[in-house]
Length: 326
Image (cartoon, rainbow, N blue to C red; front, top):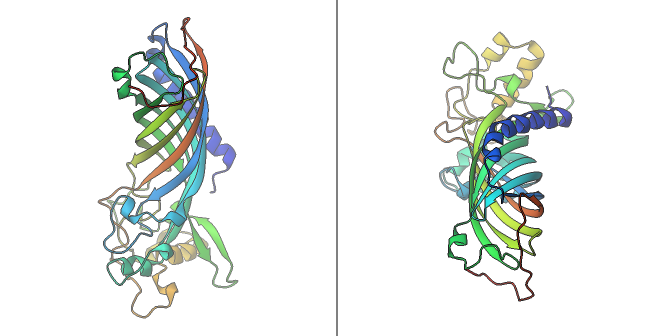
């Protein structure tokens, strides 16, 4: 069943409430000098997984990233700063990821097998995470409270939860109409079937570990802008519904309703649809690489506004040109 935007928002709000509850004890112990910042973020979101890629053997990182799969993401955040060098961020982000073997850049090498596989997917992403921001250059600044016109690089790492729902394109053989269908209910790799006891049904809500770097520029004590790249390590290989080997299509008709089995039969193995001689895959052939989990990342611009402080602080205005000062 398709996840509506209302459902996704509801899940994220629930997760945000739980994460806030978990972090309230830490927030309560912050010093009286703590101040808060709120803001929005926007930027591209990209997928790193089994589908698509470039020439040669598939890898787990940017070498196999296809620029054409980039989608826009957006979000909001609140960060508490108990010290100039440390921030504790609670963030909500929304976007989508997709991939397609049709995007594979073929030069006659191992990547040809991915092109012949002929699979595709898309999935919405709704996530919430709590992360720590670390500003190491603060320790080399003469006056860390004088921030106007200052550039500060930082690192971020945290823990989060995200919801996804992979879909693939299905072409009805009778009408020749193409539509997007949910992939999880199709059990395309035999997840949950007795014949494959090690292939469990995967959950559509999973944990992740966001980690990345950024740089922050302060227009003044109240307004700043940042650019950051955050990679999400996940613990699932089914973000794109592709992980292991092709299955015997007769199992779909054994365990699924006839109409669903018909769709699952096509969606599990689209290699014959390319019409390329000797390119079709058979049951047992490699469909994905279970040794490498899927991942996604964002490259976002953040606009932050200071919300207030727990104590009176003096911020010195400056009219000098923006420079990187330590």
